Length: 556
Image (cartoon, rainbow, N blue to C red; front, side, top):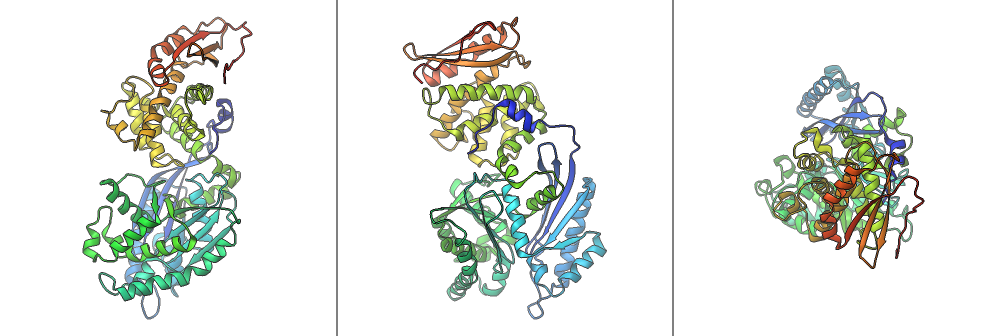
């Protein structure tokens, strides 16, 4: 995992400059659904945030069984949805609307005629893209929302008409493929009874394996002999399967599935359950939509067979795919992103700064607090705690965002910070990690974590609660060191006095005449949780500007 840089480096790379934000819309005309996102591009980060979304299951892929043509009914549904998309994007002042069409339009004999009709009736230009180009843009979309850390990842995207398999490690994609197996297509071909018969189920499985065999084999050829890739799932089918599984396991449906894991064992159990249920019974499942219930069995079989063929025992979800990839591709071609590697290597940092900018956080102060927090973390690591780079990065994000709640109100702003961070749409983090960051923000002041607090109870386990208890104690001290938010403290050094079990924070003022009395008082006022969590006595000392005291690390 990337180690967050020092505050000065962050400032140099990511400090927003006065460039105008730009509004862009991306439309994906798929076999099952039409999706649109409208985003605000922030060129100074560079990043984008979704400000509106539209989705409609138009079932464009329900083509004439004899001619293979798009039906008049399906085309009318699609055009009506596209007209609404254009109105929404225009109302939000999108400077450009980029649309792409995938397998249903690619394969229909009247596909191009449909696109001409869309142009005439809505004014939208929809580009027809190849399966490989679709896979490339899906890859870019996933890169914008998930950390790869240079390690190989297999991305599987199951659409209505095709399934894309992609292999990449954050650089250029190693392998891209698109195979004609999709949830709508295979439902039409094989699901002839409700629930599906054993005979049709066996035929469906065999067909999927036969169709995917070449793509899986070719992908394997691009893996090193000892590489063990992570499987990432995108698209509505996989999100629905993950939602059903997660709702059943938790008893409630989460607001975001980003980073959730589904094992092959659990998926097989889910497939076995779904194939025995009829349509009405599937509709009753928590997390299942009526339109998705019609095609979920075929989609689930595609995923299960693909995972088994790829030798993958689990997958995680990513909520970004083709639409976001269209945006990233536009940013690349317009020079707003220097290269894919730089864009990917800082997903978390960019997303954190984007959220801070959204809520008008005082970045200069937050970066100082982050610098103090990371210094305290590093000087206590291996002595008072054994947390790793992962937890260090969560602390950094919380330090940047801890005062976001001022956007709502100064009063109880720490509670507002929790809500804004929890539901702000941070990218690159799992749902659990976002919950930790939000809780750290919640406890940077006032009461320490308590079991009776609902947000603290949302943490999934004892380890996660301990992270919040200990790192929030560090964040409190870091926040206190910038009490006046004027940069009174230039930097801190630390000394561990093992015999006395005493941890000393040495304050170096920016102005030799400033004794930093308010900052020192604030640290002493907020130190009790730190002393309790780590079982030490905390001392804070002012280091005169003329002193030659150096940072020490006794018994490190």
